[in-house]
Image 1: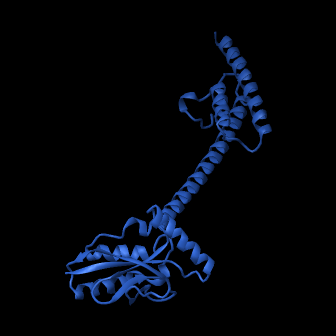
Image 2 (image 1 turned 135 degrees about the horizontal axis):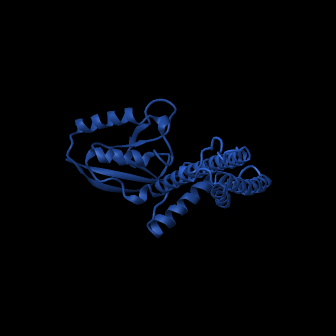
Image 3 (image 1 turned 60 degrees about the vertical axis):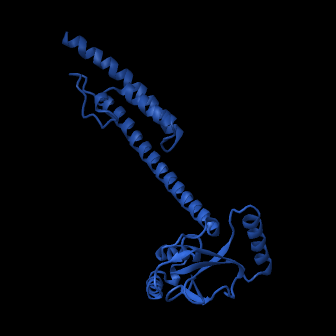
Length: 255
């Protein structure tokens, strides 16, 4: 049984002194001041004097080690003992070999797969608690925001597609109603083929169908132009009157 220690650094490898100072100030305010979090690098030490972490590289594993607390790329902040592992050094080395295969350097992602995510996974396999929430809170919040934004954009695109499709169907439907009414056989009062409607129980009732289409237009599903709507509403109204007169004539003839 041995301690598992987490080493935490301020991320100051931007190449710009101004940016590095800004990050230090952010960490000072948000971590030291109000305890929310900051922009940190982390590494795990277990057995020996080396710490293990993860970073980007174009080829090979992104898992690497360096002397504990001495990573030259960052500014050392503090260390935390997360707990004790019951695994032997042999088992720990086996876990590290597995992680080295599973975490290639080109899979690195600042928000979704960074050094802190690696340390979380390493600690989980060692059987000790994961990192304190404040260590990776900024990355997790950013990742969640990106996911929400992506999901929202997808839903908006889907809604737009559905509205356009419904508009086209309704437009064709109303045009078909007017066409079929104008082509009614007045001799026997029997209509021709009736187009598909929103409800089979309302076939052959142009007034209902025109109202249904008008309500659809009101909710935002519009055809290509407003003039088309007006023209087809007039056609539907004319068709309704014609349909009513011809039905009356056919009824009188049969009586």
